[in-house]
Length: 245
Ligand SMILES: C[S@@+](CC[C@H](N)C(=O)[O-])C[C@H]1O[C@@H](n2cnc3c(N)ncnc32)[C@H](O)[C@@H]1O
Image 1 (cartoon, rainbow, N blue to C red):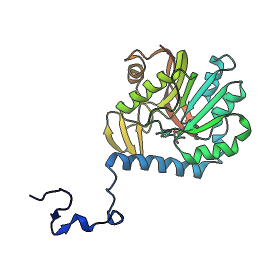
Image 2 (image 1 turned 180 degrees about the vertical axis):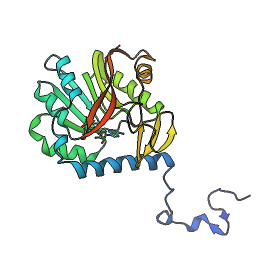
Image 3 (image 1 turned 90 degrees about the horizontal axis):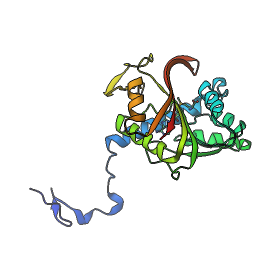
């Protein structure tokens, strides 16, 4: 059997002959390859549709959050995309920090919405949130929490709990198991499908209740399943307003 000790010959090759510059880097592991795909996909999407009209108006869940808050709250938005909801909420008298993993989206937001007062920063939801415990009065996440397998989803919900102050509000929407895209493409996990390169995890009402209250993280204030227009196409979403326990 070939030995891998430094300096020993393996199949005629002496490791001492291979300089650092000659070494072929290891290929990325499968998970990392998937990660890059998703980021690349979203950067391209944002670049292509940045100026489209339907990405400018604030959305119904942002209006709902605005109505449920008194002025002057610290809000964290996750997966902010074109920044329309962040800018709207800031305009309603709040201090908004808006994040997304797409560097393109964040850079474009910084230049387009410079005067808004919103603080934009890059945050990949698959990594711990870069904020301190209890930093925010509210967390807002429209259509950005349904891209991950169950384990990562639960980790993200724990992180949201951590950065919210006690009794802070959490409003989010995710594509539901009644959405027309449900079941399309390859099933790669429970309620998890990859189609057109994009991975989506569809939420049922039961699953939503479980991730929120299963570990006693949040109490549910309202939970609805409804139709919503997403970039001019009909979608079915779970929408939930929860309160941090
Ligand atoms: C359907 S768009 C919603 C954008 C925005 N919330 C809205 O309603 O217009 C999903 C957003 O989630 C972001 N996203 C996807 N995966 C992410 C991840 N791992 N971490 C952070 N953001 C992510 C995308 O870049 C995109 O902006």
